[in-house]
Length: 248
Image (tube, rainbow, N blue to C red; front, side):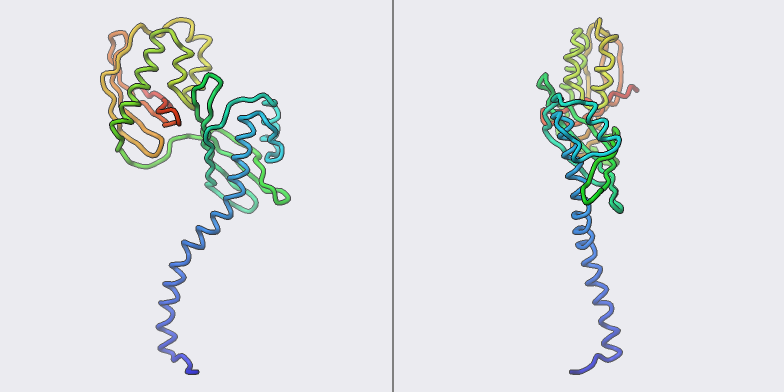
């Protein structure tokens, strides 16, 4: 067998480097998929247990187990969609971002975004803590379809009309996530009388859209007074819902 000459060995190195470079993304993707599967499965199981009021002890420890037990075994909501994405993975530790959409007792949908810390003990991944997370991702993409904009405008108009008609509880159906939590928390004080008598949306223009999130610039009138705001939305299974209203 003929041995490689010094020149031949030199010419093979660039080829080997090209092959290795081509394999790296595949190897990284395979490792990441294997490393993140356990934490993501555990967090989905934990969230579903909380929603249904079932036992979450098998997939939780520490603070997370205590908080799950404090909720009791009463059914809270029916999970419609639970998405988990590990954003950081270490040695027997991971941080997972969770999106959960649920159907409430009144038939409306709501959503929440959370951050969970997960550890592996004796080969089992368990949630040890969770906290609310910001649902707003980074990125620039202004496009939104006319159909989505029309639906978003209807949601904002419906929300204002419900408030004007003193249907405070009904107005919550147009909200989700932190906006709905804040709205429901204020029911005892703000729900006693209409906040205003009439409202009309004159324009609503999208300024940003990415995935199931969108921001629109709105102009509207409340009791004859002109107002402007940036309205943030999330698209749930039953349509666009308001995440927040930032007055301008």
